[in-house]
Structure formats: C-alpha cells, structure tokens
Length: 405
Image (tube, rainbow, N blue to C red; front, side):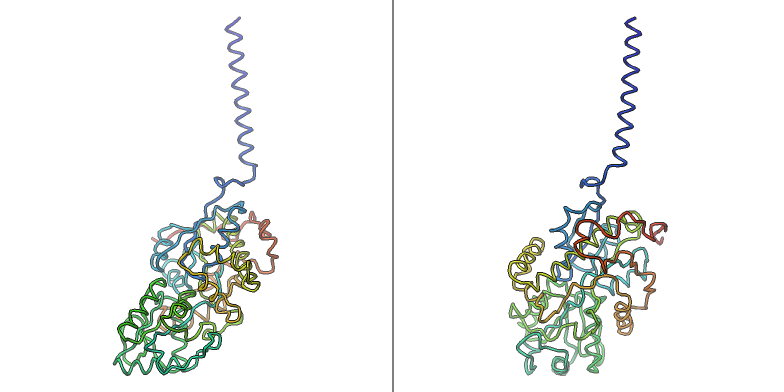
C-alpha cells in the first residue's frame, strides 16, 4: 500500500512538473522583450567627431527606452581602424565617410546604407604661413570659397617648389572630395598621397584628433600647410590659435538640404536577423538629431545639456568648440533630413570618381536600403515606440546573404 502511494505521488509530481515546464515555455514565447538580457545587441562604431553627435545623444537619452535593441557604442581612433573592425564583424552598425563605404561595397557588397548621420560638417583651415597676405573676413560665417585661399596655395607651391600638404582624415573621404571640387573650381590640381607635377596641394592622411598638432608642427617649421577635417577639429584650429578657417564644405558641395558626408551602414546579417532592433536604433538616432537641432536653436540650458551628453563620450571636445561647431548662423553642420538621399550621394560619388578618389562608381540602388527612414513620422511617436512597427518584416529579411569567399 505504501509502495502504491509512493508511485502515485511520484507520478503526480512528474505531471505537475510537465505542466510547469509548459507554462514557462508559453511565458517565454509570449512575454514582451523588455529586459536588457532579452534585447538584441546593436553594436555601433563611431569616430570622435561632430558628425556622430546624434548617436551619442541617442545612447545617453534613449538607450534605456529601447525595447528591441541593446544599443552599444565603440569609439575608433581612425577611419582605417573603423573600416577593419566593421569588416571583421565586430559591429552591426558603422558610422562612416561615404566614399570609404562605397569603396568597401565595391570590394564586398554585404552591407547596406541605411541612414545619414548628418549633412555638411567639414571645413578647410590654414596655418599662419598660408595666412600671410590672405584676406579673410573676421566673422567665420562670411568666409566663402573664393580665390583667396587658392591664391595662397598657389604662392606656397611656387615658394616651396612643390605642393603644400593638406591633412585629410582619409583619402577616401568627402573631405578630399570637397577639396578637389574647390581647387577644380579655381583651375588648380590636387594630388592624393604623392607629389605630382602642377598639383598645388597634396592630400595626406592624418587622423582628425592629430590634425591640429600637425598644423602646429608645420607652423613651427615655417612651412605652409592646411587641413580639411570634420568639426569640431576644423573650428578648433581657430579657437586654439593654430590657424584660421578658410571655408566650409557646405559652400563648396552645395546641395538643397546640405551635402551627404557620414552615413550609417548596417551588415546584411543584422538587417536580416535584427530588423526591429536596428530600426529602433535608427529611429532614436533621428530623434536625437532633432533634439540637437532644437537645442542649438534654443541655446541656454538646453544646449548645455546636449554639450554635457556629448562630453560624457568625448571629453576632449571642449564646450566652446562644440558650441561653435553647432552655431546656427553658420550652420556648418546640420542633423536634418537623415533618411537616405540617393541623388545627394550620387553627386559625391561622381566627383570622387572624377578626382580619382574612387576607382569606379557603384550601383547605388543595390547599396541603398531606404527601409529604415523616418521622414514624415512625428518625433514624439518614435520615442514612445517605433511608429513604423518594428515587428514588420523587412524586405531584405527574406534574402540569404553570404560573404564573398
């Protein structure tokens, strides 16, 4: 009798355990994914530039409100490092200069362009040697790409016997495209990485954070030099006394909403497997971009809050440098209209091919994925939840993407 009772008890416990196990499975399947451990990781690579401020603000303000994405940021020291890390599958997202992204796509098309990070955003600055006899307006907003700097570069070429050096973040950059376009407009030639006959300027790669030191060193040597870099580094040349801004790229590469520069690219794998999480991150970056635009107009405490959020990641960016970079009267950079802009990128690509920066054009239709756009969406809605329905199936999710051997 006791044996029978023991068997019955054991059978009952087994049955109860099975029921509990099934309930746990059902709870796991149908419970909303709201905890960090259940969200999908979206690792993003960025550079210490004003170009990527919207990602920093999105991380600080909105990462805890994301229900699909576990948003993470990783700072890179140089563009080659960022390129290599993305190629090594160390991130789902990368914020990158558009000519470099197009060059990568030409070699291995296993990622897509999903958003802009900003528009405009770089400038040419010249050192004291080039400033001699170069009339520049006192206010930076009045400095336009006329022939003043071009003539100074031409004089430097004559005195040196060869081209003066300009520091660019990469030869595969929008900065190099802007420089080429400026010189072409004034009937002058640019060389890329090596001296060439008749070129007045030779572009060399210098990481943004080292570019001001480069300009100072050339000053001390008495050698004319310049840099074409992103904000705030170009503006910091002036605030630090190392030189002066000659012109802003927005006035060289003219485009209705501002020219394309840094873009966000996402791996095909993340587009396929992490659609909702990726869409959520892009939506909140666009929201943060709108926050920056509002703050730079409002000024005061709202602007100071934005500065503080940026400096949590980039303490080397001084408050004055950030504020000067975001001046609305100059509008040297903007964070508006961040959906993919194919015609805007085509202008950059055509100039880059003409300059020899890119070897050949790419298929922009294949490169572009407009499925992550937020145009026409009220920004408040993107904060409370993705209005585009993050669970909606993305057109690329049905595709199987493979790396080239």
